Length: 209
Ligand code: PRP
Ligand code: URA
Image (cartoon, rainbow, N blue to C red; front, side, top):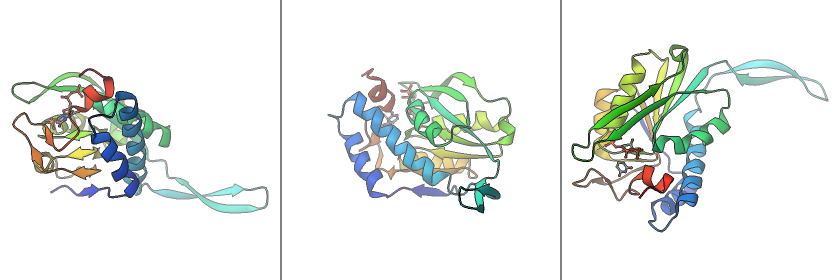
């Protein structure tokens, strides 16, 4: 089974409640997705390795720490994953970015691939896959299968709301992928939307409802 981390930080939970509210408009929705992603990035990068470096401060020489050259790649699943990207890049500007385009077929709820562009050196990188919603798990499983063909060093999946069904499916298909989310919700409804969820994340980010 995948390791799962649920962020219970009060600031994340507060922002998530506003995000879920159907009266929250697109501008604030985008801002909240970004703010939550920034907190999640902070936690999900907690295990990055450091190395000692010597720095000369205005006072004296000091032994300090810098990131030990681990290369990262952020891969949002289009469209909604892009809402988390800028926040991640603001924390780790040196990361490279790939994109995977998937949409859920409205009748079958199965993901359909329409775009795939990954960094050429992804095999040297630790990958963070971004998507606010893990519902049936189909999109996450397919996106990660596509990325794995390029042999990245490791993969983490960052979402904001996860359904128990999606966690189960993703853990079974890719047990090596650590899952991070801000909430594990109750279940999926008959249209495979997360309950209580926040509705359609892509539509709410881009105002396409
Ligand atoms: C949403 C969401 C995930 C997917 C989750 O995208 O952003 O990618 O559904 O559902 P699943 O776990 O059942 O696969 P959607 O297909 O609506 O596309 P969009 O981001 O372009 O709106
Ligand atoms: N995709 C969404 O955007 N929301 C859901 O609840 C399920 C899938």
